[in-house]
Every structure is written in structure tokens, then in C-alpha cells.
Image (cartoon, rainbow, N blue to C red; front, top):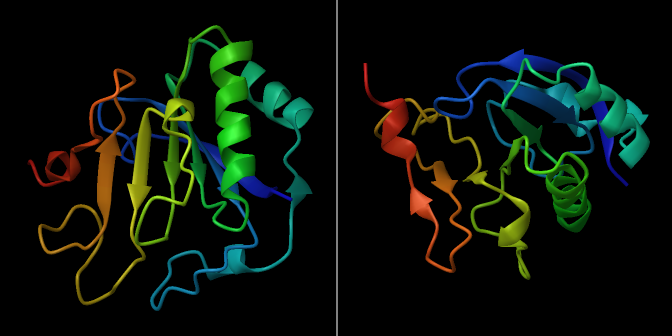
Length: 157
């Protein structure tokens, strides 16, 4: 089950997009130095299709991307919701997923997403905006080609 603990419009998580970031709880990763340790807990409301549609409907015309922040406890559930966004909103939004896992999940549904961040937060390596980071942001192409690593976009000033 996916649960959300708030959402907000953000500008830095996905390059060149105004993003509705949905914070998901029940994170299994336990990254040292995590900036949102409360997301490890079992808290928030269930993220149903109905709740997602209501949330997105509030921001039509204001955001260009919907990004799930977490959800590693239920990767298939995250992919199902991302697919729903593409289908129900007729491609009006890009979709993203911030995963703390080191690799794409087994049976990864690449058609569901336009962007995926993978990698746990490692304090010694820094976040995405540091060239030393272990985390990667990928642009997912829907033409069958390999995901494109666009992490360096965060390093430009």
C-alpha cells in the first residue's frame, strides 16, 4: 500500500519542470543522513487513484510533472499510479519517481515514467547537485532506447 504525507510544488527535483512532488511514507531504505526520516514511518493517507486525481486536479495548468518521492515499499504501485496519470490526464503531465534503491527495480515499468532518480543518499557523496553524488537522475525515452543519465544538469550554475 502507498501512503502520502503531503505534497508541494517544487522547482528543482526535475530539470525544466514545475513539479507536484508527492511525499510517500513507509520508506524501507533507512539512508544515513536522510533529510526526511519521518517518511520511514507508517503515516499519512492511502494514495488511491481517487486521491491522486483530486490532488492533480487542483494544479492543472500550474504543474508540468507529477513526481513520487519514495514508494520503494511498493514499486509496482508507484508505476500503476504513474501509468494512470498518463492515461487519465491524456499525457498532459510528465511523471517522475525518486527511488532510494541503488538500481531500477526488477520488472521495472519504464513506460510508466519520464524521469527516475535512483540511489540512496550517502552523506559523504552528497546530493544530486554535487558531482561526487552516487545518485542518478535518468530521462526515460519511450522509444526503446536506454535511459539517459541527466544528473549533470544539476551541476550547472
